[in-house]
View 1 (cartoon, helix red, strand yellow):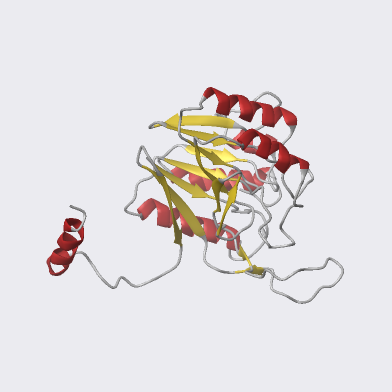
View 2: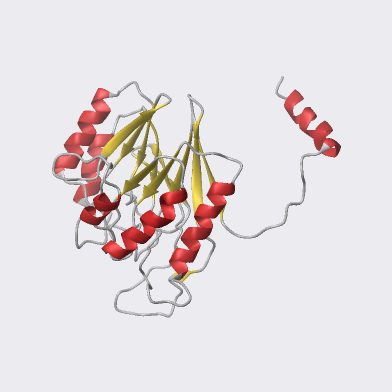
Length: 283
């Protein structure tokens, strides 16, 4: 099974831009790359911040762009989104009690848990007791099922100070309590930070998929809210999407930047001896 992931699209950041908003251009190019790629996903997961302002027009533009996608689409909330508008354009998206966009998908022996870390009016993450109880119950009921978790906010401190949570925010402690001693969880995949990041949470591998919208600058220096120092905050590094490959035993993640490049080698008869030799080494 192949799971495609896109995150942080931010449609509506600059809706009046001419001839077209940069974020819409980047999203269209990323979708086009995925649609023509040799790998055919079984689903597309969107891990939040689909829009920049949570408005209806931006969600409708997202929905229109996704009409050509032939696979099931599974969305999540980001801090820039609106539950009401997300559910309006994805009416079949499941919710839990309380209206949280939090649900599961089970396919090919893998349990996919989609978590809602949205708290209206807050930039950072949230995970209330109701959501934590749902997660604990879901994990307890699937103790022997390989599991992957998708969520918008990474519950970790990355070193990008202006984007990071505090070290011991209550929502992160609640999440850690639910995920501790859960060996069936193979990985956690997030968005929000607009950069490729790998770490661990509760001993579980955690990765941040880079954004479709412009990326956050690679700058790990301390930053002060009282001292604007002219550092770069956002860059036009290429958009990226992820492909998570589940082979029934292990989950492997791949990331592709969407930009132009030249092909330096094609698999023709002249390279067949090399390919055969590489396969023979496995015997």
